[in-house]
Amino acid sequence: MFESYSEIIKIEELCRMLKISKNTAYELIRSGQMPARRIGRIYRIRKIDVINFMEAS
Image (cartoon, rainbow, N blue to C red; front, top):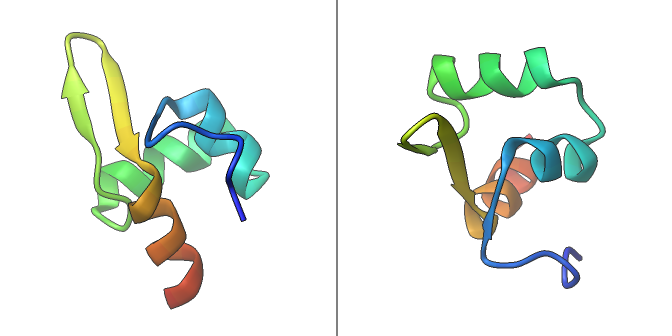
């Protein structure tokens, strides 16, 4: 499904994958619906978590 993406993605890639805005992506992370790790100032998201989110929706 998302073969062209690496195992760890950034917010911009999450937005492209889900076709959502950056504000919506940050809200998903803040609400805990999308697990993410913050490294410095940049959020990193596992691709498997995006797939699990899509399957649960």
